Length: 503
Image (cartoon, rainbow, N blue to C red):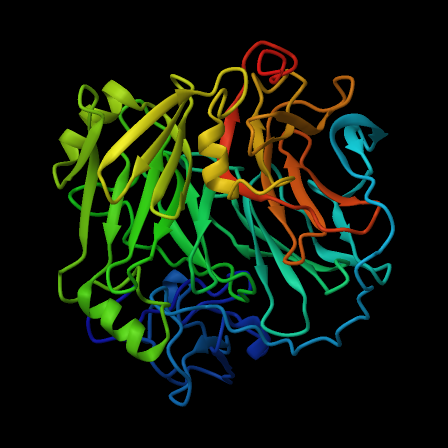
């Protein structure tokens, strides 16, 4: 229970750690979430910040110990960041120099069969995590927690020290009333070896995709009725605490089948966030943070409350409305107008990314790719059937800079959960298509998700969702992968080779 005067009633004393404020029974500070401490009692001593409760309701039970907020520590609530890891920087392993031998990676020449995959020549792979199994670490130990099921959207975050990095992965488990999803994190050292795994967000539902923030946190989206967008740090130590953002919760909108988030912060004084919804009338939302929250964030360098604070009531949410005849668009604060436009032109949108003032969005109902020019308020659309960006080399050149040998990688949404053939694909600056990795002989099925690269780009990470496998792929010649990734997803056709018609 929460009261206006700041004190809280006791919860049931038989909660499972980590325990929140006024929850018990704790045996020590390590049982309490975040900076909370365990208040040890012999009888019915008052616990700071907590009401006396009713022992008939299993509240304030004599001799039971409860977590409380020490007056010398900052409060631990859902509106405060939960990202302060306790671990120190690990020693940096020796990283090998750039190889000088011949390059052996040939994109699209799929000759390597390993771990259920058919890979391009010059690649190697291994499965580093499987749903419901402990993760094998570099020292031979196993992670304390088992890897989550149905891995989906993901991103990589470089560590502040030591050269290591984190692969953050959503779990699409759960349903409208089943809170078994969340976010997991696999930790790597500078040599790209797995050093740890844990869940960093729990008690959420069908966490599908999401998006990064420029201050180094992950926005995870629930794709279910009344779903929300939650912010979590890659090294969060309090996974039970949920930080529900304002995105998707304004103008009378109280949640939805949310998919992906992207941002445009070219103007640091006027950043925008964009949200897709996998629904026939799911609008494309644009969120502008509170003026005061932005001012505070810029002055302090702490952006942890930018998406949570609207105390001055200046945060603005509006929605995309297309003019299909003119090829233009505008933003409207009318949610109904946004839903109507979505239903007419861009149903069931999922993947979204923003690069250099261009917003890219894939919508699976009509298998369309939209490219919005955010400055000129114009847009283009093209089919993703027979491969994303089919016959659109100028778009690829724009993304890759047109450099020779530079290619753009993207995931494939399988035709169905039982159809083989999904994989990782790419296109170069001329529009040439390549299959980099693909399901071998129907061993795997469904969609590929969570494509990301290590900070040094020597490791490619992705998942086959149905099998719950995370793959680590690298070049045998020791060189980094060139090109970029676009956080959108190709929606498969019935053809077994998505580039057959493109070639």
